[in-house]
Each structure stands twice: as structure tokens, then as C-alpha cells.
Image (tube, rainbow, N blue to C red; front, side, top):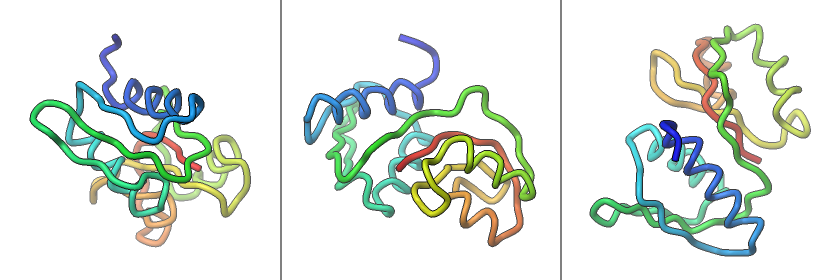
Length: 124
């Protein structure tokens, strides 16, 4: 097991999706991972998630791919298009999740607020 809880969790979610599973339990979670899952739930990629003690139950929705971005690049608003082309299959399909000084948000919201940050993950 690596030190990156977010990358491990997203890999496990992707492996469960490929195996045709609809839900899974994660033993390790963090506030950052919960924030990423909240955005995924709002976008419809996950149906639901909830914390039960030290484990996290995740129900998978319509998800094609999700992965952590390593290394976590620092980007400005002007550089968003470059990374959208790199990580997403098309311009209006999927989201890149960014950690900014105003919180964790999608690249669309960060563009509207004109704030850059660190790339965390992408989902589509």
C-alpha cells in the first residue's frame, strides 16, 4: 500500500468498475478523498458514499475512468486547457478536480472564479 490514500482509493474504484461491481468498501479514507467523492457524487459518477466507523462504503454510478494525477501539477487559469486536452477525452466530457486556495473544486468552477491550484484527479 502506498502513502497516497486518494490514488489508492481511485484505483480501487476503477478496478471495481472494470470488474462490474456496483459498490465497494475502502478501509482508509481522508477528508481530501471525501471532498473528491462529494464532487463525483454531484456530477453523477458515484451514486452514494458513506462513512461507517473507519471504513468508507462507495456505490459506483456512471463512471468510465477516474485516476489521481501524479505529480500534482500547480497550474494557473491560463493552463487549464492544456491539462483538459491531456487528461479528458473531449472538451465538455469529464472534470479535473483541483485543490485551490478557496477549496477543492472542478476546473470549470476554478475557471469561473479565476483561481489556479494543484491538480488532484480527473473523472469522466
